[in-house]
Structures are given as C-alpha cells and as structure tokens.
Image 1 (spheres, rainbow, N blue to C red):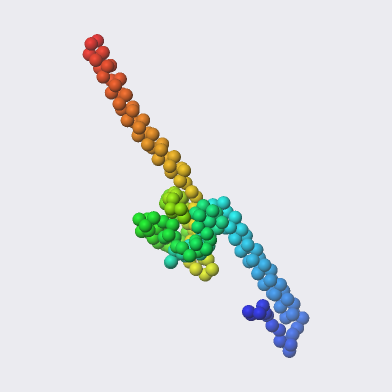
Image 2 (image 1 turned 120 degrees about the vertical axis):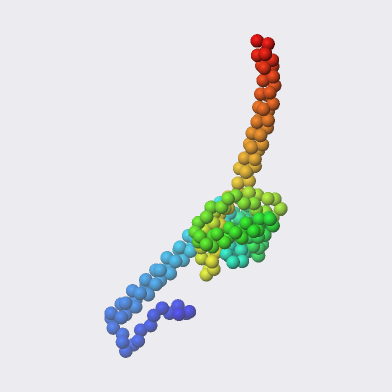
Length: 191
C-alpha cells in the first residue's frame, strides 16, 4: 500500500470481469485522490490568499498550527515566530481567563462563533482591537479552530471619540440651559 499498490489479482483466478473491476476501481481511486488534492489546494488558496488575518489554533495547547500571509503582514511576526507561539502570546495577560472561557465554549458548541471585540498585541507592542470569528475544524488529525480576525481598532477609537463628544455636548447643553433659564425666570418674575 505504501508503494502505491491499490489492488492485486491472482493469476489462477484471473477473469475478464475481475480484471475489468480492478481497472475501474483503480481509476476511481485515482480520480478520488486527484479530487482530494484539488480540494486541499482550493482550501489552501482560500486560506493563504485571504486579505483577512486567519490562523488555525490547537484547542488543547492553543498553539498556532497554521497562519496566512495577512496575519504575518498585520501582526508583524514572521511565520516561524507565529508557529512557535501560542494564542496566549498575542493576548494581554488579563485577558487569558476570558480566552480560556471562550475556547471552552467553542469546545462545547463545536460550531461557528462570532466573538466580541478582543484586544491583540502585535510585535511592536501596539494593542489592536479585533473582531474574531471562530469555527471548529479538524486539522491534520488535531482538534482545532480556524480564526478569522478583522481589525476594528479605528472603529473602536471612532466610537470612543463620538461618546466623548456626546458627553461634552450634554454638559454644554446643561450649562447653557441654566444660562438661558435664569434671565427668563427673572423676566417672568417681573412680568
């Protein structure tokens, strides 16, 4: 089998029907193997060429098993550095308990899970906000998750600045209402 032998025929029992079946089964096995290789290539192309950072993480150890080019570009680590790291290395120490709880939930659900926005640390130490989507997969015989990360740092910063501006506007409105109300109250008193 390791040499590529898929079937054998005994000379004493060789018939045209057994030879025909052997040839048909062999050609079907070759076609199935080709289909499997094409499917793996399509998966690899989808994974590697995605513009969003994607990685595969072992569910038990949280080690990176595979990463795409967008992850290398966005996070600054080389592929080799990533493959020697675990998911804990790109999270803040205070976020590790939540990370482990999220992984436990993925283990229980064994399905797609869109996570809230989490904070990741890139190579230069900068913290970025990412929205992640997690799916359970089997990767080279290991229980793993495939993660898609979308950088939403600008969105989070814009939302914070809008909330800050709203607070300032509320304060200005409260002060201005008193400034306008005091003279009106005096006028009403005179009238």
